[in-house]
Amino acid sequence: MSELIEDLKLAMDRGDILVYYQPQYHAITKRLCGAEALARWRMEDGSIREPKEFIPELEDTFHICTLDWFIFEAVCKFIARRLREQLPMVPIAVNMSRQHIREMHVAGRMAEICDHYGIDHSYIEIELTESSYVESPDEMSLLVEAIHSKGFQVSIDDFGHGLSSLGFLGHIEADRLKLDQSLIQENCETERERVVLESILDCAHRLNVVTIAEGVETKEQLNFMRTAGCNLIQGFFFDPPLRELDFENRLETSLQQIFTEDILSIQSTAVAKQLLLDAVFTGYPLIIYANLTRNSFYMMNYENFTSQHCPSTGVFSELIEQGAATMHPEDRDLFKSTFRRESQIARYRAGAKSISVITRQCGDDGIYRRVNTTNYFVQNPHVDDVLVITLCQNLD
Image (cartoon, rainbow, N blue to C red):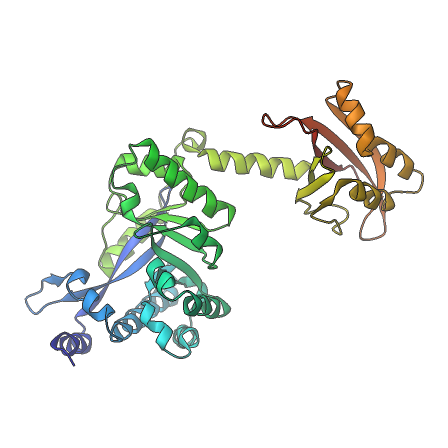
C-alpha cells in the first residue's frame, strides 16, 4: 500500500477529509438549486490539500472508491441532518469514479446508505465522467441503468473535455450534462465557439437532458449561457467550493432572493420556441406534417387529443382512410373528399392557403366530439413538394 493511501485512511479516521459544496444556480433566476460535493484534505497545519494533488493517483487504483463512498455517506449525513431540522435542502451531486464498475451491487449500496439515513433518493445525483463511458461503454451503460433503477439521477461530467461527440448523448441515458469549462474558456467571443455550444445545448434540450455549465467565471460567459438556453450555472462567478457551514448560509440567503429581472430580456431563443410550441399544443393537441407530393406524414404530438390510437408516421392517403373511419358516418365522405391528397394538391395550385373542416370524431371513450381540422400549405425553400401542416382542435 502506498504512503498516500495510508495517509488518506488516517485522514478519514481523524475527520480531516472534508466535503466542500460548490453551488449550482438556475441560469435565469440565479437561485441556488443544487450543488456538487467535492473532497478536500485538511493537513495538520490547517492548510487544505487540493484534489489535483491526490485524486489522480487514487484514480489509477481501486482506492478511489474508498474516498467516493466516504464522501457519499458524508453527503447523506449532511442531507439527513438538514431534513431532520426541517431546513430547506437541494439535490447534491456526488462524483463516482470509473473504478466502481469493478464493484458489485454499486447502485444497491447507494440505496442502502440513503435508506439508512432516511433520505429520499432524489436528493442524490451521481456524477460519472464522459471519459469513463468512452473507456467502458457497455459497463457504464449497465451501471447507469442500475443507478436509475434505484431512483437516482445521473449526470455526465466533463462533456467537451476530450473527444466529445453529440452522438454520445444518444447512447447513454443521462439526466444531466455538465459542459466542461474548456468549452467557454474564450468567454464565448468567437462565432465558432458559440455555434458549438448552441448545438450541444439544443441537442441536450431535445433529449430532455438538463445542462449545467461548469467553470463560469465572467459576466460575459454567464450572459451567453443564459441566452443560449443553458439550464444551470456552476462556477466562481457565483461561488467557489464552500465549506459546509458557508454553503448552508448561502443556501438560506439564496432561497430568500426574489427574481426581479424581465424574463423577456434574457429569454433564450430555445426557450422562446418551446413556449410557442407549448401554446400551440394547448390549442391544437394533434399536429401532423405531411408531404402531399411524396404521400408521407409524421406526427409531432398527439397528447390530450380525443383519440390516442394514431400512427406516428406512414403513408398520408392511408392516414386519411384511418381518420375517416373514426368519424361520424355522416361526416366521413366530407372528411375524405376535403383531405384527399389529390384534392389538396389541386386546391394548393389554385391558390388556397389553407383548408378547414369541422367533423365529429369518436374518442377512445366511444363519444363523438366536434373536431376542427385545418391544413395549412407551407413551402420549403429547397424543394417544390406540396407540404401541409395539419392542426386539430377539440371543440367540445
